[in-house]
Length: 202
Image (cartoon, rainbow, N blue to C red; front, side):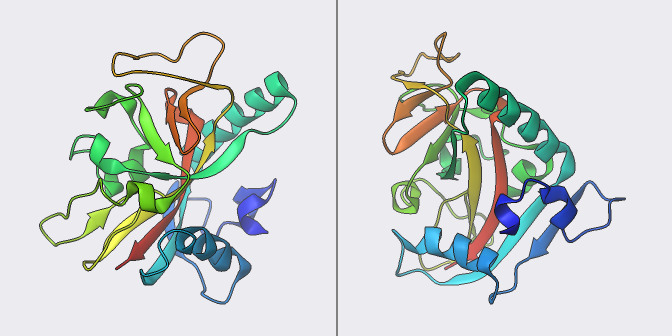
């Protein structure tokens, strides 16, 4: 499975002279089906137009270092595949900006369980939080939308230990890694997440 490979960089479809590329997945591959199945679990009425693998070497290497630290602390991986709802961030934190520079919690606003980056276990939860841009496109990282074309990202998130948070939580409480729980997780470290797949859908 390419998406779960321990040597994932070796499986990427890009020359090593480039730090960032977007690779469109073949619809007949296991990797494509893995992403599509996660998408359709809660949004079966939508149509996937394409799925791109985000190949950002700098971001991925930072994430891998953070992942190794989590495994050392907890003795196991706490990685989960989650969706990101972009509306909780300022409009400047667009899908393109995220692909180029990772998620940035400095843009977080209107947060209920913590001033970090929000992720959900179900695409349908995020469905109410996006707004179309001037081209009537919607942007999310794993999130989704109806009628107009939209973008959504399936992200790898190091959940670790989770506790409750509130709108004034700016730093994760000592001894924990995320706030929220159950279907919503909030991260506070920019390298705690890797946005791996960008889904274009309608």
